[in-house]
Amino acid sequence: MCGWRLEKVGMGAKGMGTADEIKALLGDYDAIHVRRGDKIKNRKDRFGVERSLHPHLDRDTRPEFILRRIKKYKLAYSSNYSRILDPLIENNYQLFIAERLIMMGAKTFIKTFKEDETSLSLTDDPKKNTKSWQIPVYTLDEEFMDLGCDGKVTGL
Image (cartoon, rainbow, N blue to C red):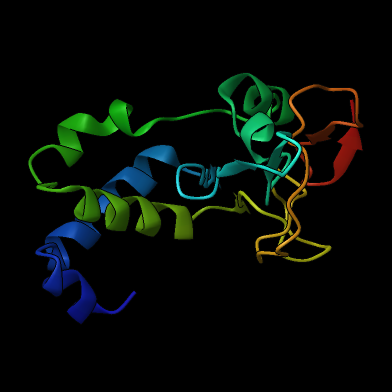
């Protein structure tokens, strides 16, 4: 990430140093990006049936489903590093930048949406808006996948 961008949000070298300190504490690590809020949008069709552009997103990004999918991974949370982050972070954008720098250093990066056939993701819903409103899925009736330690996707 460019230094001028970090300077612009008030982080600069201090922010990169903080991210590097956390990455050193983590050692060899994997990262997950979970995006929900702005993507979970439902609407009712003309028959009153709920529809969503990302029908599996709500289910696949709930904590209990994420834990099932990544059960073989060691988890670390930003709250584990609050003594390092608190003096630096003044707003949510700075927290986003610090988290992004940490995620960029991960050995394996699991994204929220499926971007291509080789990407690891929490949901198989495509990132691009297909404009196809579908009925949301909340159960495990469909095949639910588990991300193995080797990064290969295997069925539960």
